[in-house]
Image 1: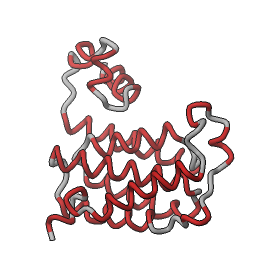
Image 2 (image 1 turned 180 degrees about the vertical axis):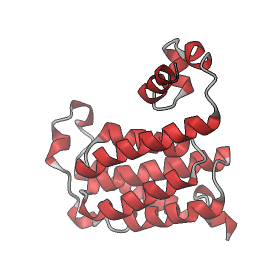
Image 3 (image 1 turned 135 degrees about the vertical axis):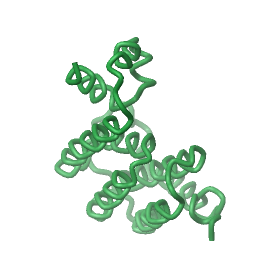
Image 4 (image 1 turned 90 degrees about the vertical axis):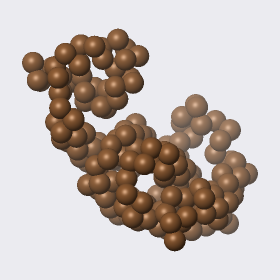
Length: 186
């Protein structure tokens, strides 16, 4: 019985919302899974997804899963694992992927500020990572991994003009203290 609950949980990346959308949340709730066990499963799920992401840095679905797990849990270990993983890989990434990472980090910071999921001190490291990634992007030499040009949903979003506009928006965010979680704590 617990195995079925774990399968459902991992299939939906721990999202009760997605379970509800697919009409399986009531079935999942019948298993009476504790929050502690859910946190354990989130950690396992994160570690599996991070493992794939490390091997294939352009694994968009896996990156999105990691972001959602970090946003939806108060697990500081997961947050630190996420930060450490990105610290190890971001230098090797193309400009487009770095911009995307920064945009996701801003989303995480805004979400957790609203939900008060983490201690602000835990998030200052994520804010510093955001700035490190952002300022590693050379606006004069923007690059896009060829993989992205094969994705139809990105058509028209990979031009230098588009990337520069997104980069400028991120630089504005980095200068607005109230948008970044740790900055208004100083």
